[in-house]
View 1 (cartoon, rainbow, N blue to C red):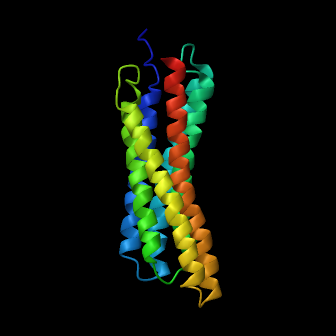
View 2 (view 1 turned 180 degrees about the vertical axis):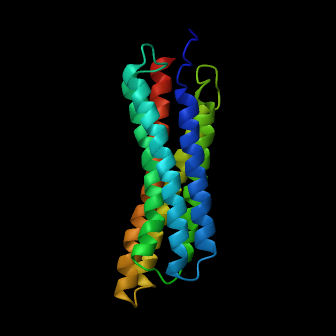
Length: 209
């Protein structure tokens, strides 16, 4: 009987971050071309498809971790990282969903800047995950983690500046302030989620050196 191929967790993680990169690219494209809330419907459908693909990948990770006799890293770490990467997908999807739900009328400059930081964070996370399979010999992890932390710090500062601008300059319409306050919160969570996933990877590496 042929030996069953062993599940490749590292490849599965790479698939998740590739989906996150596609989501972040779609978010940027959608925001740049935005003219009306109705245009967000197709983007939401595409986002949900990325999210569904991520759910399928995670299902495979969880199933394999439950029965794997000798996983490459601790089962708890396998599941924790998969959940953290799934959160990245969920949070990016959530941004476009809330823009549609609140029927935004335009895209503030600060929102575009925040979206670009999200994409930078996701791409840095993807680079880290693509190197993860060879973590015992890899020398790039430290710099990649620094990059992700730097993007998260920039996002924190931009969030503060955007909220200040929203409440002091863009404050003529109460609903505009309310809507974008909530959307900025969700955008900032995307960068937080990337940093959290990177921190989990860093911890796994330290535990297994």
